[in-house]
Length: 126
Image 1 (cartoon, rainbow, N blue to C red):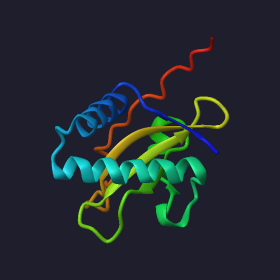
Image 2 (image 1 turned 120 degrees about the vertical axis):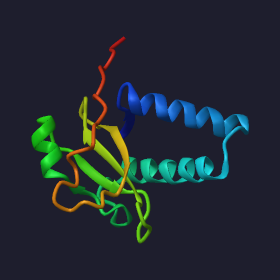
Image 3 (image 1 turned 180 degrees about the vertical axis):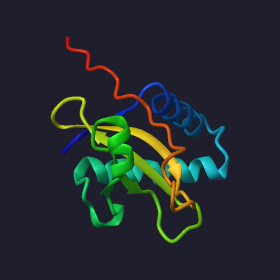
């Protein structure tokens, strides 16, 4: 079992705002749908990052650019511009940090050039 963290500042802010809207009843149908898909994907990643439904695979161009292995997991399949979750192991052993959420890129040749990922953040020890 892995502990899921949100990358800073973008993913952490995005998740906090989305969660708040859903819990307060202010979210629209699309936001609720995304919240459920994202929550399900994070649960599956925490239990087994290689779960078959996630179709997890490394994105070597992003790994090279960011200097650490970057993985992509599916939020959904067989959907135009289907959501993709980007993540890395860490910052500590047993941790996974969600560092991006993007629609599936359409441009095959430079598919990941426009993707910007969140930072891992710091682990704060007590």
